[in-house]
Each structure stands twice: as structure tokens, then as C-alpha cells.
Picture 1 (cartoon, rainbow, N blue to C red):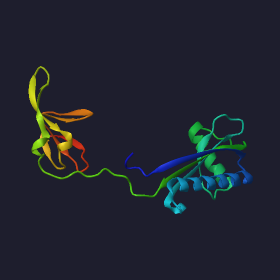
Picture 2: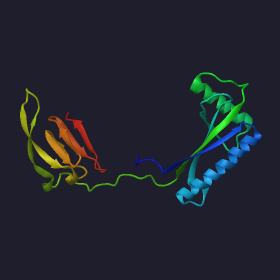
Picture 3: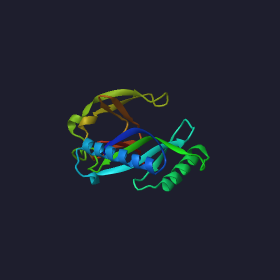
Picture 4: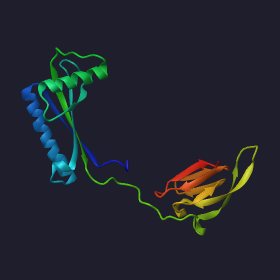
Length: 198
């Protein structure tokens, strides 16, 4: 989620047939939704947004609609071609002789901005002396039995430090166990990566 662009999804119900008059209504409604998206992101230029248009439509008499991609310069023929192909993908058939009616519009707008990323933590090859919280006995099965493992504070680990197991890393919501024969390293973003020793 942190690597996603800021996004809003706007929908509007619209019942009309797929004909020239109906597509004019669709374009008019989408222009209003675009203006609403620009206001949502507080931008004055539409070029600051990635816009994805979709029209939910169905064959006349059907209950369920399918969402088909829409371009603002679509003609009746080009949109029907897209709709028939989308319907066939969803339901394995198409009815090119049937009337098609529109039920809903969907605008997906993404703000072209810097992607929100995780901040970097300080770099250090070894953890600070205060990172060790003590030791705890851990049971590793009947073959190994109880082994005393050092316990580290997750918040005190620096980027770049590597620790060989067995050990425990504690934080408020979880505890990470690193087995004997494994090494845990801390990435610049503060993530823990556990690998097998060669």
C-alpha cells in the first residue's frame, strides 16, 4: 500500500442505451467526475492525474453488468466492440445483435506524485550495546532441548547489522525467532531479512 499512488474511485449510476446520445451523456458525466477527482486531490490541472474510465453495461434484459474499458473518444462501434469482447471473457459468449444498455460509470483517478516510501533508519555494522534486552530459554524440540537465546530490541537495531542465531528479536506486537544456522540482517528500511548460513 505504501508503494501505491494516491487514488480515488468515483462511481455514478446512469441508465441509457449505447447510442450516440447515450455516449454523449456518458462523456458529460465523466467530465463531472473528473472535476470531482481534481477537487479531491486539490489540483488545478487534470494532467496531474492518471485517469481510467470504465462503463458497466449489459445486454438488454440481463440482470448483471460487466465493466468495460472506455475512452472519451469512443464511438458507438468501438465501445460495443470492447463490450462484446469483455462480455465474452466474463461469460464465454456475446450477443452482437442485442441492444446494450449502460448502468454505471466508474472513474479511477490516481494523483501523479512521489510514491510514499518507508523512511531509512541509521546505518551501523553492529547493533548498539543497548539493543540486548537479556536472554530467554527457548525449547527447540527433544533433540536440542532448551537453549538460552539472546533477546534483542527491534527498535534498537541499525541498518546493516547482522546477527547469527539462535536469538530472539522483540517488538511490541511480535517476536521473531532466528534459528541456529540462520543470520538476520536489517535493511535500510528497517525490515528483517533471515537467510540460511552457507
